[in-house]
Every structure is written in structure tokens, then in C-alpha cells.
Amino acid sequence: MNATAEKFGYPESLLARFEHWLVLLRPAQPTLGSLVLVCTDPVRRFGEIGSAASLELAQATDRIERVLAAAFQNDRINYLMLMMVDPDVHFHVIPRYAEPRDFEGSSFTDSHWPGPPDLGDLLPIGEAQRARLGARLRAQFEALTPE
Image 1 (tube, one colour):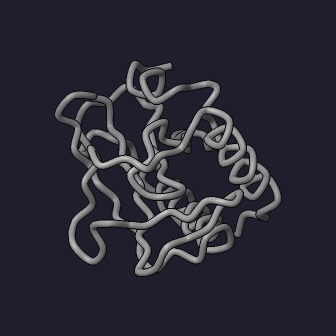
Image 2: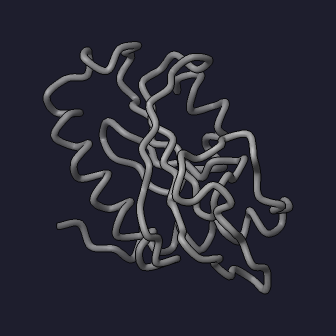
């Protein structure tokens, strides 16, 4: 697996696998349900992904959007392709919320709504709560029938 996926906790953080993409729970959560979508092809530029990976990207984002909407009724999703530190093709998937969302007895606020997300401003989610978040999202990915 590429170094970017491993940096973001693969294989423990894996929520869904496609032929060319992995959906990972982002270890650091700027907003509730933040993910990383990592291309498994050995490419370092977005323009280098093949046609199969490109087509599958639409399927992966559709599934992500349906899972996050079902889990937390997000208002928007920001897809950030930064690739400054981690060079493998990947997106940070940041669900956005106009109002706080509750999970496991805690309320989480998107403090930068409606502006750009701040990936350094993290929610106070502990290891156990992050594990339960991953389990919940993984189960929703597994239950979702691909369209």
C-alpha cells in the first residue's frame, strides 16, 4: 500500500475499498465524519490516474456522499486535494455542518462554517469514540448497495 494510505491509518482506518480507491476514516477529525479518499494506483499527479480510476472516482464519491448524508445529514462536503506533504493522489473529504451534530452523547460543531475548513482545528474525539465512529461508518458503507 502507498505511504499516504499508511499515514492515514490503513488498514485499521479502512471504511470501504474500491479497485482503485480506499476510503479511510481521517484520524484527525476537523469535522465529524472526516475521511481520506486515497488512490491506490502508483501515481503522484491527479492527471496520471487511469480511465478506470477516474470512472471509479465518481462511484466512490457517490457512496461517500450517501453514507455521510445518512449518518450525519451534512449540509455540504469539501473535497480538498492538497498533496503538499503526502504526495500520493488523495482527497481530504470534509463534511460540513451549519449546526452542531451529536454522536455518542457529544455535540460537535463545525466552527468554520460557512468558510473554508481548518484542518488543524480538530474536534475533541478520543480513541474509543473514533473507533466507534469508524465502526458506524464502516457498517453504513457495507450496508449501502452500490448503484
